[in-house]
Image (cartoon, rainbow over all chains, first blue to last red; front, top):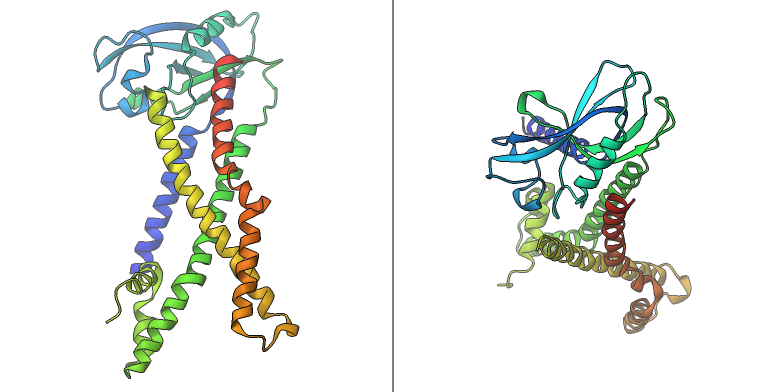
Length: 226
Length: 92
């Protein structure tokens, strides 16, 4: 039972972490820009998926409605389309530190083209398009590319994910070192103390099961000895 | 003022990481010195005092060594990363 709950929670945490990374990390679309405009947009329960209020994007009339720039684009298949919002990101999260949305909008307008003479650009963006909640990905940069079939290597994602893997590896190593040097000796000490008064060391071993059990025993060694 | 808040949160976080990493690094070095002493057959039966002195000398060398100084990268690399992000997003 507990194992199942533990596995369930672990999988849930992994899924949330995965979704979080998928939302936050940059992605590239090769598209053709077909329209750029700004529009007063109502922001309600989906505020989490827009920039925070004080980032200075567009004209903020009230906290619930905002003038937001949009970029409309079509994919090389000529059918599927995407609508990007173009908002400054502010200083905290996600850490793109984008405050050139006016310039980006000008670049997007400059890249406007039609079906007969398509001009292909790579739009870097983060976020999702979820029509049901009126959520739009935020465009971060626009670069001209040679054609619709260009292959873009996601260097930023490679670097960030490698670094994340390294960080997780190091946290694990640190935890193991901490356990080996401080927690396990504490367990042995506690076991010996129990032996001395005739109780069984297994009681300690039993108490020390799992992550929090071990931490608990280690913290107990900090208490004043009686 | 946004950047001040960011800088504050960033450097508080990095300071925590710096201290945890330096404790870890020190612990690894101490363990290495202990093992070096304990596995050396020539040092069998040498008094505990000398083992202690050997470890303390090794730790002293570590504290002054290059590896210890490399930990400052914990502050330097994220700062460069953030500056580079700001540059590449807004000026290229």
